[in-house]
Length: 389
Image 1 (tube, rainbow, N blue to C red):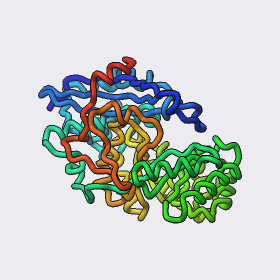
Image 2: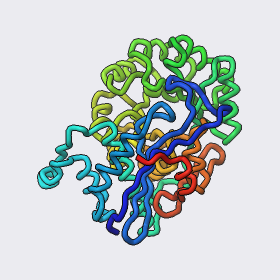
Image 3: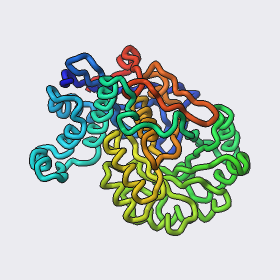
Image 4: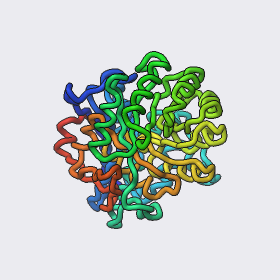
């Protein structure tokens, strides 16, 4: 079970023009991610994913270089089953021995950003290896699953006021979804424009379909409060990332002023960021991204914080196959989870990178019961779209 090889690629998959959308991130022309392959001496392969951008909004050269030339060499020869100790080693850096002996974190200075994306990718791959080595799905290793299927919401919603209702109703029809999410914020230019789109969506959906909104952190606290007031009659299920993650005090102001639940966390890393959200009473729903927050190991710690503060967990699953499926396993095992995100935007990194298809039925998604993460990566597809870092 010792690690023999570590290899990462910047995988960049084009999206057909007809399937592209535009948001505050611009025109999404590709789906990009850092995909990691770890192989043990016994031939078991684990797959991970690290994220530092949304779709084609960023590049992955630096993250992939870090995985191949800085992180990877530290892993060679390590026992792949020592997941927590490897996590702490990468997080604490040169002070790993002192941190291990003292029993508390002593992270290196670069404890956020692509450092955490790299740790996340490694962590996912190691859990995948552990599950495969034991012949069980990851959720079994996390304490078991609470359901064979989880409720899901369809995530997308970029159309203008004249078309948003039709777009979201198309999501409902496509997978029997009983909940949908749309984008608001900077892409609209002003709170009242976003509010008009939301009210049009609610009128089309009727009262029985849950409606969430996601501002991608593009409102100021003042404009987020205005938007919340303008949409009070829309009965929103949640208001996601009303302000940037760096303005947690502002997010707390929005939560205190609004009647809609606040969801946040896709831009946050580690349990420490989520602890701050909880202590500031800034969010009702935690949304860690498994390719950025610190992987499965850290997501379960974040889940514990959510449970301790009587908050809920709904991971950010706009991701490639490794991070998406990791999120399913966390949701299956977490007592705080209640719904999973399913992208209705073009996502070849989810649907084409692996052989398995996501089992969507009647607004629910099946939790994989295959060993490890439950995915089989198509290496020919990966290599056809890979940029070696």
